[in-house]
Image 1 (cartoon, chains in turn red, blue):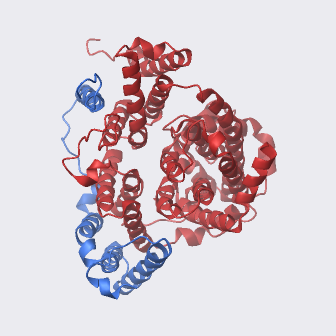
Image 2 (tube, rainbow over the protein chains, first blue to last red; image 1 turned 90 degrees about the horizontal axis):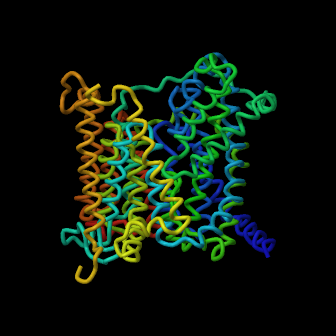
Image 3 (spheres, one colour; image 1 turned 120 degrees about the vertical axis):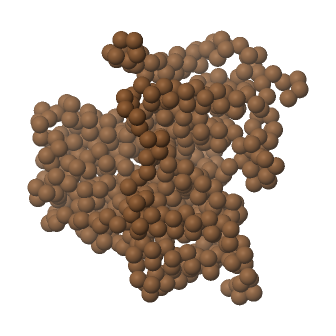
Length: 499
Length: 130
């Protein structure tokens, strides 16, 4: 039976139309990733309006491919410009640039490419094995378990974000507040609508995401328009030279980066960028040549490069099984899944097995395709990085407008995009992470629904939230996660004003 | 809601309580961390540089203009206008800006309006619609 499902899935993917979509998205992703200021999340947000008009498998395939390519391509400008192409490469940008300065740009780019592919394939393997297994368990979940699961996801988004966790909580609450707008709540009662028909339907997420991830990023680029990009010279020959030696020399690092990346990706709210930071730090901590880090040493690039691509696949695990996004990209993807009738949740493995296996195959294909296309991207890096920003940014902005408009065909979407673009910019500039807000918007309805129906079932008793075994375990875990920063604050000397 | 203990006000109420609490904690944190007085608002460096300031203003103003004018002027005219102004302000020549504006708007017309059938508004140019 599984054989025939797999065969059908393979046929779905090998359709020439799907293959063309994959190739086109791959080139789009490589370009977006390679140009600083354009991110993988932005690529996803801009792809959504286009995917509306595609069948489910090519729609998802285009996002999977574009993001995988973009996360790798983010390494390219690190080597040439000392600027990360996407935030996921920021952790080792200085290292990669230092390597270019030492004349080892070829090795840095090669390592970025090869170990991105390995990390991506590792994450995909975990996704394929773990997702169905988790779904088996998730079938038995009731509103109590889902409530704790969502809570845990929201909390991990706050505490994994870089910077002040308190600001993360504020960001999360703002996101939840946005999700409360409209009629779509358990009571069907209009909230925060001010009698406005546009608001009664709730705030549409795609224009908000285009605003927060694309418009805010464009504002940042535009504000820095007077700073020219200075290109470092590098001779790029055969990027695969020496990669086998590196693989033999750093097998543990590759494995550790891939595993940590997948895990961070699977934790809600933290994606490829945080995975790369943590893996780079881990690599440095356990390295035998710690003093070489920062001077153009390839070890950290290998571990973090594998990590950010594996995080991408890991993020799909909770997204598919629970409908809880693992990162900002899957936060957008979940909306697309619903539109395409591939409702995420444990039953997706029964109802849509063929489409799901097709998505898995696309993951493998996209990572393999990264090798030849990645080389092409590295070779044409100089041309891509010379793309005129003064023309590129306005055109992307017009795409944003059309994309926000296309969701509901009203100009209100454009207004939402503008408002949340400015909000996103101000938040990031002041140290408020955006990812928890996005997670709050996506999960707000789910949190409220499960909270209210649990409260009604329990008749207001909080104890009932912990009575079922899995719910109790998840609840305990949530409280443990919550207490970590409290304990840390208490342990820190001088944290009391009196002392 | 009559007859229901947990109504629609519960969830926003909890959010509001959380925001108040976090706001208070942030204030305390801010007071404790900074020994010397800080300004209430710090402006970013680009705001004092004419070109970045004009560019940011043009992006925000342009988007607002689109929201207000697109239904009347139509997507195509507004698009070409905005692209020209944006590209020119960001540093392209007039000729380049206008050329890219025309090509990009036409490309979006072909891909989104023709191919994906998104009803981009024509506004006053309704009778020239193609």
